[in-house]
Length: 213
Image 1: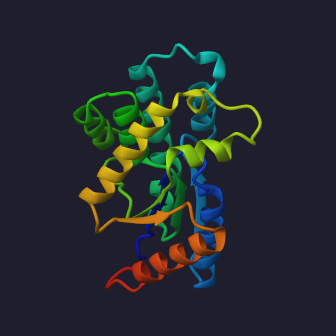
Image 2: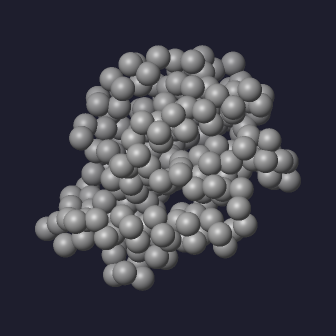
């Protein structure tokens, strides 16, 4: 059986990942590809419980190291219980965030060392890595303006603008370092234009030798 592919969507607050995920899922399914859609932190029940703890506004004093370890605990469960089994049976996995978010939020945002994150990535994920990552890039001020109309914000969404600027810079640095895996999409465009750019990126990925059986 051919291995499935792991496609991740990344981006800062207000970038529109949920809308983009739905468009990706529809496009892949139209090609006859079996798709599993998931998110991080989250996925299996235990990971969803950890997500609640990580994002709870009441936990505002959480240490950066604690946050990082909790996210990777959720990820280890997610990979072993959901992602790796799906890929092994040939299902494609679409994930709202993955390890790049740890490098951006806990690394860039919190200032934790990339070496620690890289070690945890190997320990928690093994050889499970994204085949394609779509980065929805949006100026921080624009993303925060979009968030302003939402309901209650979670613990991370309460961070100040400089935190999100560091997050964005980290995402962009990672995309520049791995151009073969990342596709950067201007998320400040109208929704239709963003969807069109994502469709083009997926079509190009699907056309790569060996991606499809």
